[in-house]
Amino acid sequence: MAGAAPATAFGQAVIGPPGSGKTTYCLGMSEFLRALGRRVAVVNLDPANEGLPYECAVDVGELVGLGDVMDALQLGPNGGLLYCMEYLEANLDWLRAKLDPLRGHYFLFDCPGQVELCTHHGALRSIFSQMAQWDLRLTAVHLVDSHYCTDPAKFISVLCTSLATMLHVELPHVNLLSKMDLIEHYGKLAFNLDYYTEVLDLSYLLDHLASDPFFRHYRQLNEKLVQLIEDYSLVSFIPLNIQDKESIQRVLQAVDKANGYCFGVQEQRSLEAMMSAAMGADFHFSSTLGLQEKYLAPSEQSVEQEAMQL
Image 1: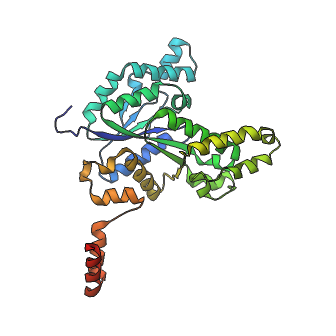
Image 2 (image 1 turned 90 degrees about the horizontal axis):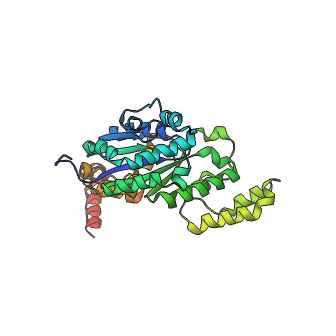
Image 3 (image 1 turned 30 degrees about the vertical axis):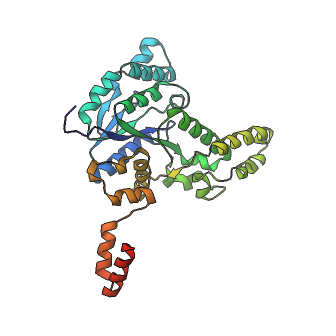
């Protein structure tokens, strides 16, 4: 490891079920981060991921390929993917040798979409845990397709999966509702968007389920699931439209606050950056003073300066 490189590295572990938009997120986020001046390294940890749209700094396919595993061990795609992750876990020296020269970069890990890896299988969690030992501070960015909001039963299922993932992965965690630009095509929502992002009183969802003849027979089960989610009170979501830079910026502020990047020394992080993360909005300290000097009358400026001194 180069002596001049910073000891601590930061990044995102991008997880979520298949089709939730993980690879598209890595592409959009990497472009956004480069526009901000950060050096970005995208790492593909999904051996089933082919035709990557982004520039890949490290590809797990160089170590193990899903097709080769399936042919050699006569496994299906699910079993083969689990084997690949276990193989990577057993060969972490290979991964560290690939990551060490990239110190000083901001990492984006494009992870496999198999749900078991994030809810109860131990390989991926072990890999993340080992990265923490290498002083790599990650935030788990969990993507969920926003179309699940249109179906109360599916949304409760998504909440259970998100909660299980948060408890199992054991990383600072940000949940995203992806593909928000398409949500109007999925159908009308029963409640406004804040209800789903803030995970408000879920009893209203139960009332909607009670009107369905099938789910009416499982009301007690649904009540217990909802009670479990509300007892933990951990799950909330940030809406994401990967085509919208303001949406990406809101996500990045939450991620930087979760993994501590905004409080580090990279890019000479200033009070302005820390206040932006703490307030959840842009905070331009220097530009605010500049506007005051430009537009306020001298008497108003003196009042503002006295207020700041107090």
